[in-house]
Structure formats: structure tokens, C-alpha cells
Amino acid sequence: MTQFSEYLKVRGPGLLEATGETVQSYMDWMLSRGKSAASVTRFLASVKSFYNYQLFSGKVKTNPAKGVTAARVERKYPEILTSREVELFLEQPQCVDAKGFRDHAMLELLYATGIRVSELTTLNLEDLNLAAGFVHCSSKGKERIIPLYRTAVKALQDYVWKIRPQLVTDDGEEALFVNMNGERMSRQGFW
Image 1 (tube, rainbow, N blue to C red):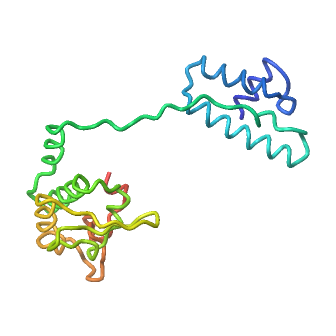
Image 2: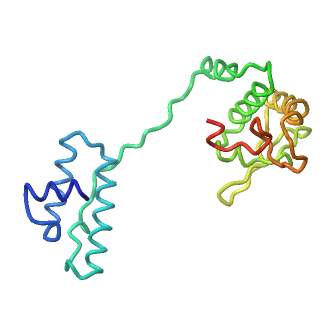
Image 3: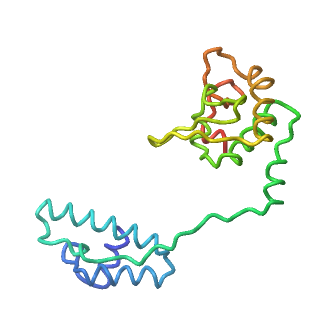
């Protein structure tokens, strides 16, 4: 809102006297200065909230941004890795120490299932069924049973049977993946 206020000081009415045309001209000005459509859309959302508050407070009679629409934001789709890039990615963690085995198991599980990192870090040991070859994942109120392929099962077996017991310091720890202190891994710890 500060930038919008500065724009209005130079070009037009005061902040409380702005019109829909004023808001639209500022958005056009932002785009001409190289701002992304997403930035302009965020501005519009904040200016609508600002004027709704001013309307509620009795400082303005109408919300000048009410009828203004922003340009459509272009969706950016994730890049798809080639099969060779996937191979290189999965070969990265060297299985020479506990951290390498754990990281390899996490990457294999992510690749095998397509789950989010936040879902990975909330998995408990009981969510994994290696004998049947699946993982039980629940997030955002939805539950899924996701099958695993042989390579992922092998990586998880190596981790769960050989490495995880070395890392866990509390026998009551339920987390499937733990950090080097034996506690549940966080999203930040994963990155």
C-alpha cells in the first residue's frame, strides 16, 4: 500500500479518493515496470482488503477496487526430469553411512510414491508395510495406500532394519525418518 500511496501522491487523488480507474491505472503501471501478473494480483487483493476496512470504518463510501480484475496469472508447471536425470538423482546419496542410507530411502520413497516432503516427514513406522510393499499416507484429511516398487522396498528395508535402530535414541520414537539426533525429521531438515 505504501507504493500505491506514493504513486497517488505524484499522479492523482489521495488514497481515500481513489477510483476504480485509479486502481487499474496503477496496476497497468506496475505491469509496465516489469512486475509479474502474480505481484499485480497480490496488490489487488491487498488493496481490496484495505478499502473494505476503510468502508467498514466509514472513511470511504465505496470500495474502488471492487469491480477491478487482475490479469490471469500464468501457471508454471513443474519441469519433468528425464529418465537419466532421475537415475542420477537417485544415485546421489551414497550408501556408505547412516545418513546416506536414510537419504537414499527417502528419495526412493518420494520417487516411488509422489508424496510431498511434508507427508514424508509425518510418516510413522507403522505406516510402512514392507512385506506387502505399500505405504499408508494421510494428509489434508485424505488417506491413501500407495504401492511400492522393489527398489524402494529394498532401500526402505536397509534403512528400517539396519540404520534406523542406530539413529533412534528413544524407543518410543514413532517417526519413520529421523534426523541424526534420533528425532522426527522436519521439512527444513529434509531440505
